[in-house]
Every structure is written in C-alpha cells, then in structure tokens.
Amino acid sequence: MEKEQLAVYFIAGTPNCLTTIEETLQAAIDGGIAMFQFREKGEGALTGERKKQIALRLQAKCKQAGIPFIINDDIALAIDIAADGVHIGQEDEPASVVREKIKGGIVGVSVHTMDEFEKAIADGADYVGTGPIYVTATKTDTRPVAGTTLIRKMKDKYPDFPIVGIGGITIENAEEVMKAGADGVSVITAISHAKNPKQAASQLKNVFSRTQ
Ligand SMILES: Cc1ncc(COP(=O)(O)OP(=O)(O)O)c(N)n1
Ligand SMILES: Cc1nc(C(=O)O)sc1CCOP(=O)(O)O
Ligand SMILES: [Mg+2]
Image (cartoon, rainbow, N blue to C red; front, side, top):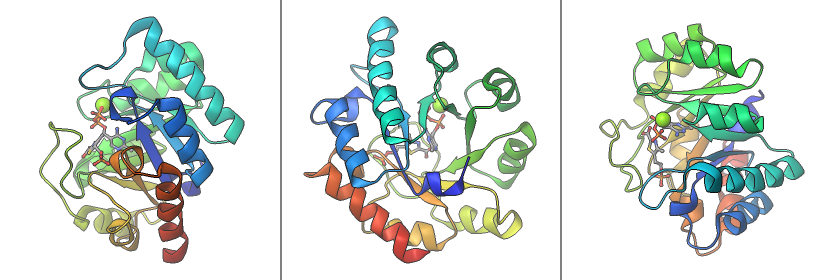
C-alpha cells in the first residue's frame, strides 16, 4: 500500500451515521478521503447477510472511487467478498495468522506500545493505527488517552513505516497528529457526524496537504 492512502482514513458502520451509510460514504469520498474501513460495531450493528449486503454496496463505491475498502475485525467477510484488506486489534486474531489468510491484501494492526509496533511489523502488517490520541466518545473500551508521544517515537525509529492516528481526531487537532509524524488521521465522528461530511473530509485533506 501507499502511505498517502492513510491521509484521510474514514471509518464507519451503520450505527455511526446520521443518514444512510451509503450517503455518508459518498460524501466522504467526494470530499477526498483516501481509504475507508467498514466497522460495523456497537448498538444496532448489522450482522450476517444484512451486514454482507451493505458491505458489498460500500465496496462498490470504494472501487468506483479507486480507494481501498478495508473491513474491521471480520476476516471471514473480508475473504468472502474479496475486500482490499482488514484492520485488526490486539484482542483480535493474531496478525501473523491474519497475514497468511489475507495474502496480498492490506493488513492494518492497532498498536499502543513500541513492543506491539515492532511485533506488528515482524508479523507483516502494512500499516499500524494507534490511539486513542484524544478523548473519544465513539469507543468505550479504549486504552488510556495517549497523545502523540508514541507516534513520534515510532516515526523516529521507523521513518518509512505507515502510521495513522485514531481517536477523538477533529479538523482542529488533526494538524498536531500529522506534525507528530503520522501519515494520516483515522476518523469516525469528525466526518460521520459533521453537518456537511463532504466539507469535513475536504478540510481534513487540506490539513494533510498543508502539513506535508
Ligand atoms: C485505523 C484503525 N486504528 C485502530 C483501530 C482500532 O482497532 P481495535 O483496537 O481492534 O478496535 P475496534 O475498532 O475493533 O473496536 C481501528 N479500527 N482502525
Ligand atoms: C475505533 C477506534 N479505535 C480507537 C483506538 O484507540 O484504538 S479510538 C476509536 C474510535 C474513533 O472514533 P472517533 O473518530 O469518533 O473518535
Ligand atoms: Mg478490532
């Protein structure tokens, strides 16, 4: 994968969206997101065939826009529909096992320490996500708020490895995350709850451009 694909990495599932997830994703694409993760989690999340049908519709949008379509946690679904990749955390299937299953696809791994980061690299991750950088209301079972310290340490030691920050990132604080060395920002609320999701995505892209 290209590091530039992490610039504005939008994540969403149906429970996160104020209108339909298709409309929200289309607006985010029109605003300039570079990658999308389908994370169907939380109260009211779809499962089974309904989840698969939505995934297929979102995958088609990403394909048309030429951006990677990543599935959170659900490796079986990702393989079933030939998604571009998966994102897994420390509590999910081990990255080394997922790497084998996903073959040439993108594997993203959540990390919270240098040890987890170096293990993710050794296991064959394509990028890592780290957070929560700031306070988030979207996910309750996060680690403590971390700020940007780990991003700086990771970039110091592995300047070329793709890293994205996540958790409580907004148009206002995204610059700090990118200046710390992140290759991009992962956001849910900043786009999915924005009055104008297209504009929010575009503003995040502008923050990325001016920090390069
Ligand atoms: C880009 C990115 N970074 C981190 C996460 C969090 O993954 P995880 O720790 O597995 O938590 P869940 O998202 O599965 O609740 C992510 N999804 N994406
Ligand atoms: C999915 C997720 N993972 C996190 C982590 O710290 O690993 S924080 C988070 C939620 C991000 O949502 P928002 O942009 O609305 O804060
Ligand atoms: Mg997970």
